[in-house]
Length: 337
Image 1 (spheres, one colour):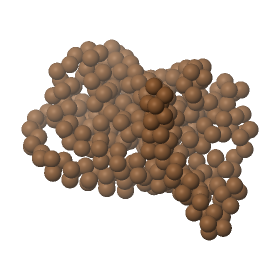
Image 2: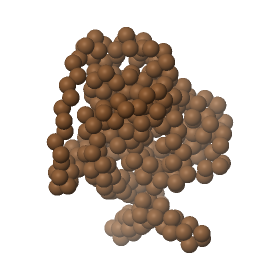
Image 3: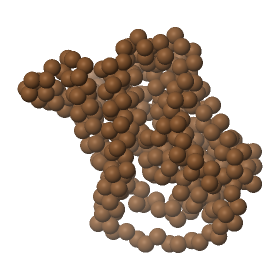
Image 4: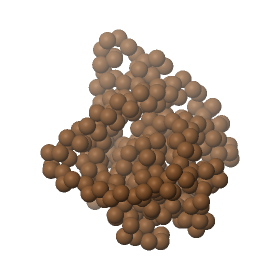
């Protein structure tokens, strides 16, 4: 068991976390005369290390997930979801969300397509919540920063929020609050052409390029914010605002996260810096969930598809779920770290 634990720590620190890369960058900066123990030197080291690490993981994960995703085009996903009923359908929808696009704005067109195809509204909302909040990429990235236990619990909790949220919406029969053009859209079944292995590899490569172009600016912004937090903001400030002494830290993190737009790749460096400064784990994860699930651009896009009452219910369910999860994480933080 000890040998397996050592191997896992090596994978987590050196393969996923790329600690060796941080050392290489630090030595390189020192070689050109930059002191990495200063604020400016530390900021530059943090920025270079996190940008390179997240970019490498991003490209690898997008390629692998896109290859898997090639087996689940919208038509096939609709057929899979159509075979299930009740809470089972919500669970399958939430799981399908883990192999779909990386941000909330990318998930909304699929949500509209599934809804117009006649799938139950609660099922499509389970997909909509799960898709940006939890995916295979977030699992690997969170493992590289927080460790396996926190990463797995984050993903499981995200899936629970998606299933519960979709189930509540289903039970409340909110179909009349979907915009008319979606409810009246005709469903056309188009058989997906059979892709060869080469086709799937080409598709995965194209997804890497497209997603990288879209996501990279937010990685730079996220890492830049993380570098400022990591090296310039006093630890006492972070602990006062987001530490255990502030009972409203989780709520504040959600309120700050909602107007922002980023995906899991952009929020990771901010979360990493906040954790290093002493912010509570649940508060950090609530911030990440709020940013990825309830970003202002995605809410604006979703308003085009649903009426205000349903939109408000969606925001309320997600916000309440995220806040509850944040406080639970804070209470049981000592079991996970």
